[in-house]
Length: 533
Image 1 (cartoon, rainbow, N blue to C red):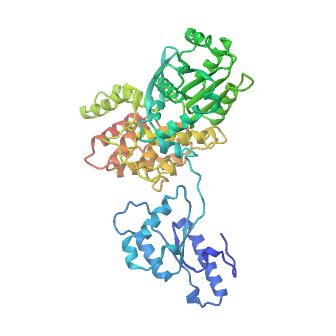
Image 2: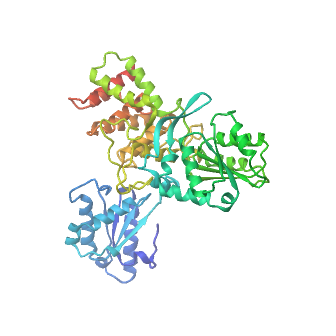
Image 3: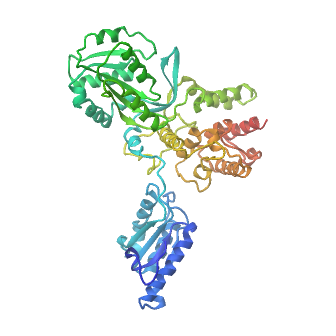
């Protein structure tokens, strides 16, 4: 950013004070102030009139301070030096704009207003860099469905090939059908002319979400002549009922296939192939509740392949789409947690009874595999409150978010980075998640549930560096965070991450914990001893 006298950008005319957000951009602020002084001198002002005062915030204004903070004191110094002139607020980077919002609230505090006649209109903001929003375009998606028990983790679902399907992250379309936004989008697709005028048969999977989608579709289409078939989710299942329904259709009738979720597209491909085998040559419409591929290119390819037939008049569309991981029980973080805790118990028979009870209570939740929501994180008692102003979704009024909501939003962001090759573990283009974002004292996210979600959702290879210096720094940060963790919101999740070898540890960490350790710190010490053997 450069300004040359005697010209000056219009927003900075009359600016005699600069408030710098952080010392890392202080040189830019000082240089701007020097150039502004040169500009004012070129207008014939004396040195006192041309002076430009530069000040700096002592820390991020994140509203964690209840008293009249040092941030407010810096603002007061600017007001005093500016003498009602314009003030430039220089900010290093913004993502959601929350930092600017916090500053505006501080500027408007009653104590500040009482001590100055400063007009808020005199403030001008310049962000040197607009950071990329990690949540891609999914913020609206999570705003619409978080807090409604739509998302859960570690859940067993339908049986496929005589084996129960396990989802590390599960999206419940039956719950989504209770949300007005989803209902409206679904209804609009059903009311399209191509579907309303020609569909005479609806095919859905034989499970709860499929039945719920079928009931909604029949209510919207309100045509008694439309037949339905609850088709088996098993490949090579019984097609006799489908064959009977096809025999009652006219040549101009079309079929509507409803599916709650499409991950790999296997079920839609199966239905499409069976219709071909039964010599059906009419038009096929497919509506998916949520398309959640691991890469958007895969979903686009799936749509193209399934549109083949009937002179390419077949159509596949989704009500919602989001990129998400697809992990079975071999890679599910909660399945790994269960296995590691069971092994730890087996090899540590001398554990105190209270420690065994703590682990067994967690294992009871993990062994059910019926979907974790509030217990997605291993917290001592209750989950901590989710802070407002996230770049991943907004905290609405009277909405109780769960740990599973936060984890799903972060998992979508990480999977998007994988699909865009922003994360890579392949030499020589190794791109890991920056530990400054989730571990360092100046970590990017103030909400610890976001930082814990990053550790939960990322693979070991995306967190662990081959550089000794980086790993030693991570271990130091882990130690510092654990010693400051007075509410014990971090310690149990860190224990799981240490067991999974996602986080390093200092050998003397048990000795650095305060005397009179809690039950959680005692468990941490035993886990570290176990890992070091």
